[in-house]
Image (cartoon, rainbow, N blue to C red; front, side, top):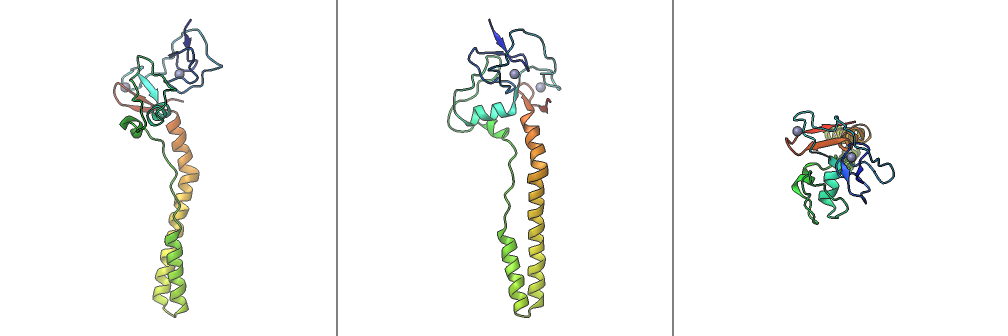
Amino acid sequence: MSKYCSRCDTELNDDAIFCNRCGNKVAENHIETSYHHSDFACPRCHSENIQSLPIIYQSGSSGTNAITAADKFIAVTKGNTMTDLARSVAPPTKKEENWWPTFVFGALAYIGFENDSTILGLIGGLLAVGGFYSIYEIDNYNKNVFPVEYDNWQNSYLCHRCGNVFRIN
Ligand SMILES: [Zn+2]
Ligand SMILES: [Zn+2]
């Protein structure tokens, strides 16, 4: 008897833990009936040859054979190097907060004011404020924008037929 993913209805290997199409954990919640989930298709070309971005990324970048691609999906290149496809669907990453310009400009302002050089002090101070502001913006991105983009990525799919990337909730 075949086993099917409860989320997207893809036929699975008997020992599959994750669905290689949508990434659903199927070990304990698989069901043995086949019914059609029509929302699991590309909204542009209606192809059902779609695959979860995290699944493509993991299978293309890890080099393991843990994920066995079903015949109807593209064969994922196995190996230690990241495939071009995996690279193109890499997750969004957090931005790094870079403090050193702010320190340098702050030190410049300090030296300026200590030596009665108002111009140097003001320029250093303004640049330090700018540095603080860019750190604030990066912090804001990491706390507010990044989680949304990451969630989007986790729920996005690539159509192997037309190349469309879209989100399914
Ligand atoms: Zn699935
Ligand atoms: Zn498509």
